[in-house]
Length: 117
Image (cartoon, one colour):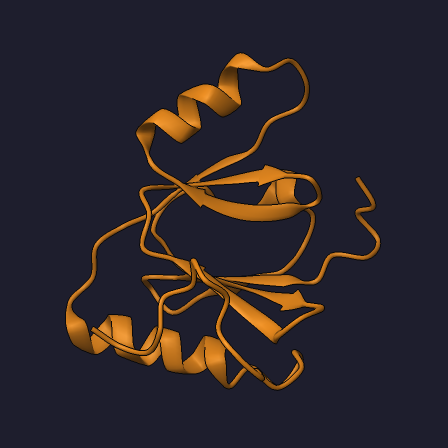
């Protein structure tokens, strides 16, 4: 894991963000994670209960995905998602989509949430 070259930002329900080493990321109240994506500029990761650090990136998983992740040996980091009202959710997704430190989005990945709810 190359902690000197992390290309993500985590957005939390309270409006705070984090983009440091994954082991120091605040655990609770995650709404959206934005990452660089070689195919689409940036990728938004959201709409799950758990976020796991695997293969040098964040992935959104359900409860069973988290359990599967925990059963394998090695270092682990899990973050917990949270529900938010539409106004907070939409503002957070918009902020992640417009984050100036990430490349422009060119398309959506097949598992990526599109727009607002």
